[in-house]
Length: 264
Image (cartoon, rainbow, N blue to C red; front, side, top):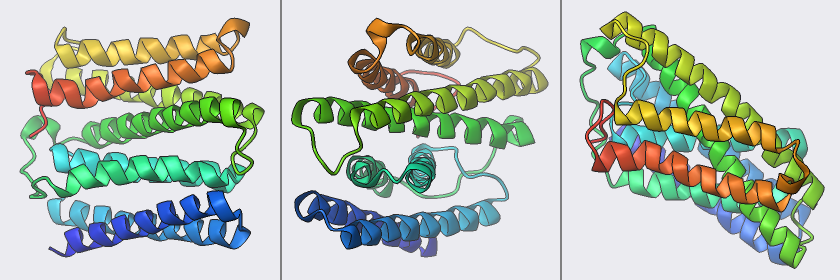
């Protein structure tokens, strides 16, 4: 009950940040931007406390069902956004990212938040590392998705509160590179974990195949940024398509198909 209260309070902070960023598009006031950023920080801190609380009670990183994966995805996305905003002061970009974050929390709050028991094959340090690298990678791909859409918006409408096309392109490319690096670590740790638990590094199950396809797609994107015809608009479109592949790998397979990564 207390952890859910913290999560609802965090959602309220993110909702206020979205409202603040939306108002700032009209009024373009530095104070509004600062308040919105403070709301994001407050929401992230509340989510972090909630995550720590659940981790302490469970005795393991509680990311084993749909509620907890959506929650951790949201937390990871907020962390990635704060990294970029603190480093680059990306301002109104937070409107779309926090709206996406709220969408994740909206679906999470409608699910069962009970802490499940961890099966023996998951009860290893590899489990936590695999999950952390995986969802931070997903969050950075979600960040790139947001930046890709904003790049297309800025290219058509030239919104003064948004970063320039050059900055959006740079941030998009950095998101893809960092996400790819973390997802690579996720794949490596997952392979070591699979060998430790089941005696093989890779199995031809549908989750493993689609995870490899995600890795292959973003490996291609890391190369595409050096090819002129894929720079700018092409790269933004690839970022949007790539996140669609990520969502299918994460939600589509877990909810619609049988795999060794079910979401209940």
